[in-house]
Length: 129
Image 1 (cartoon, rainbow, N blue to C red):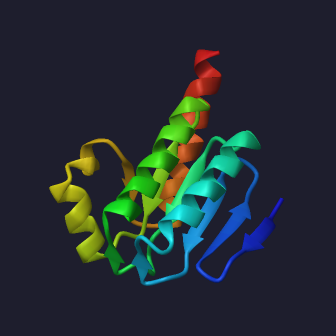
Image 2: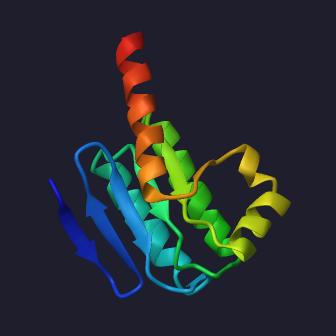
């Protein structure tokens, strides 16, 4: 299944066991974060629980961008899913490390690695059920 929805700033692609949010802007900031947050709330209300946010195009992130990332993380946890952020560019990675969010977030280098993290998490949940 590959349902895709796109704004000019980010693309949402629904896959079998997760939803991919590809940020297609160099800045995840005050201008983009509110629409991203409302989209995340919509995803959560549609029972989407596993989310990968691909930030490979994002070169700058401010506090409202970090807030959107944390909203995604919280919504995934609340629905018993997992949130993985991937493709961190140096400036964004530095901000996440300085904010000590690297201890809170699941971080992957690539979307493929993020997929593996989610698959492993799903397998562990199945084994525990």
